[in-house]
Length: 573
Image (cartoon, rainbow, N blue to C red; front, side, top):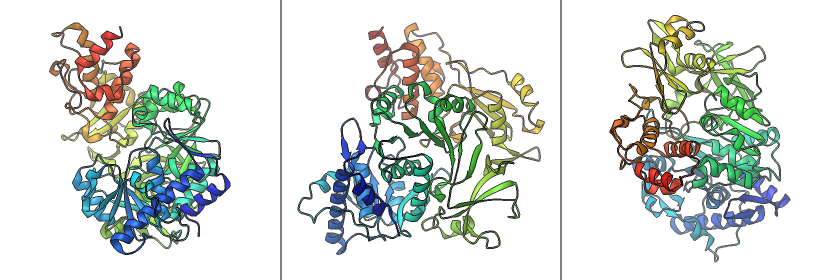
């Protein structure tokens, strides 16, 4: 039975001189990547022999804590080459969460650049550079017989926003089903260059990595600095003639499609894309809307979009997957909760039998296989496509009526607002949040907006309050952070008590951080005020748009003050 490693070895034999991996600082052929991955596998085996008296194998899970670079990919392949599986460990996570990941997977070894991870959960750390210096080890090779298709290839931990993160293991067979479909559907082949944007802590990275490597295409790896600057990312894509990419809806809404003309195949998913962003990115390229939970190997359905498809259309199942729409009695229906069956379904959460019993089900009268209960509300249209209507757990009761918050968000988008969110306040009122037009004006005419909504929504679905924001708070995954939406809108205009040349930058900060501008001083520190990397990217992009000056991300990170920005803008004036 095929595994990722056996398939990779076949690609190496067919295309040894083809470029497998490319960045601004390094290029590796498939043969070179295979050889270096073999050195990694040999070094991992040597560690297990020294500390466990045996080689690594399918029962072992090895952690990876490495940023985007060549070492990341050779480490993944080296781990898989031993027959073991890998689990990403986010270096930004709190140490207790890292320990939860390590202990849940029983990791004994972590491949990392940072020795500070040593001792997390009792695991040892090995550096990629040490593996490459292991010249006295046996001849480097990537073993093709230790793992079977049923063995685990990787484990991804779901978000911990509602509790402790849950580990989701995925087998080689499940992953190869996805890979084979993606290669055929996206026409991946030698010569195609694919952007590697997603971090390995999220399962979109699986779609970035494995269809590319197992088709003979080229992985193109931007630096962290390039990932955090729209201009530098666009230059990187143009320089390396990148034609294939996955970008989240939040990124599509914030990046200019005109800056990325070479990307001919664009994938997106994870949440609904704004209609305007969809239209902007459709021009001159194939654009796919993808849907799938982590528990079902990244994605289970897809839709190639056109100008007439609603952004909620998630299409039909990929091969090997069966999608069932069931009502509250678990009977087939045209509208209801989505259940997934087939080869994509995970064996279940690691060490969580109670949740598994509630989520991974056997319904033999419906399907011979196990089903994953997604918690997503969908509707099947006349063409057989599925429309994503929202999370069932975001259904709320308002005045005794059941309300689907995503339905209200969809109505707001139909009125032309690109970025919207709706939640219920502590007092039980519906509150709509809208990114307002303009740079600093967050005023919205709530009464006029509610009048417009009355033409498309029942009265009990119309928000009582409308709050305009300059920017939405986003999680690191790119999804709206509903918990971080403010209960009120702070003043966004400069009070006028400071030197006028600070006022425009203060206004931009107030908008981005959703703070009262009167509280900001020239020496205010962006990071100390809660600014994240995503906030910095947006702030610097706004400054470049307004002033035509590109501020280096790292330079600002070293001196994240209003005074620093004003000084740079004055020098470039």
